[in-house]
Image (cartoon, rainbow, N blue to C red):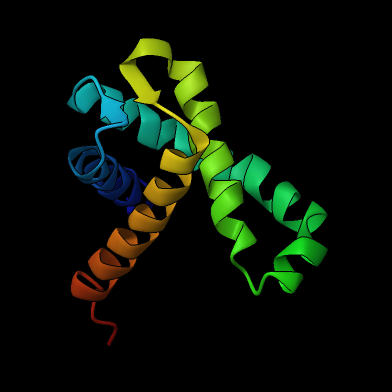
Length: 116
């Protein structure tokens, strides 16, 4: 159940990011949900490998390089989805990755489940 909630939250974050940037466009809500599912799959399989391979650069940049990894994953998902998900350039992808990280942090703080 938690995975499904995270996918819906990521879809909402993708849609909100699309409203902020003109070069970051999603065709509709279904495209956002598909992109969120693909993002979850890529985050589960590919991201850990990339983080380990780029660990020295990530340490040297104090973690800022992780935004480059996130932007590359966004560009990859946009490439897979074709016209349903369009990112104009890598700079837009990096800015979108930063905004998505901020929005995810805000949503996680506001909707954090109370543990008893």
